[in-house]
Image (cartoon, rainbow, N blue to C red; front, side, top):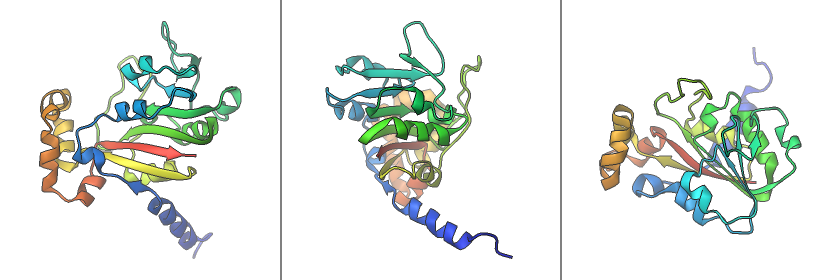
Length: 224
């Protein structure tokens, strides 16, 4: 018995996954994606930084509008306190943004599909969404449960999550071998061995295809 049209659905899903462009730049080069984002924001653009995920680069932005958004209220942050997963949240925020940055936040969202829908609706036409999501990465929620750790995203899962954007480019972070070492040794691996690019050398032992699929996570650029 065939219910609905699973063959058609399968075809449409494959089309969604195939339109995603994969870029190996960050597997083969020891560069900072946050710096790339910062350098590709022009001064006249309106910026929304979710979770203040640009970190120290945020304070160096010279844009007139560079709002921050977070579910929690801190002493001097955020500009907008809101739950990015709230249904139709975008209808409650008056500004449309040219650039939205959301790095290492979506895994902490209980409804990442609604979060991404809100982000897309908050973008101006031709706006850009810069993000990062983990895949093979340790659980990392704080003990006080100010936020939790809900999801991991494979290449296919991320492609489907971003399916409503006009174009999507994803950048795997670490190949299979360095991903294993990063999970085992965490901060020590980053602070010591990745500083001298050991991870780039050891990932050359496996194929690009393997490294794309078995990775720590993905940076991405989605365009509306």
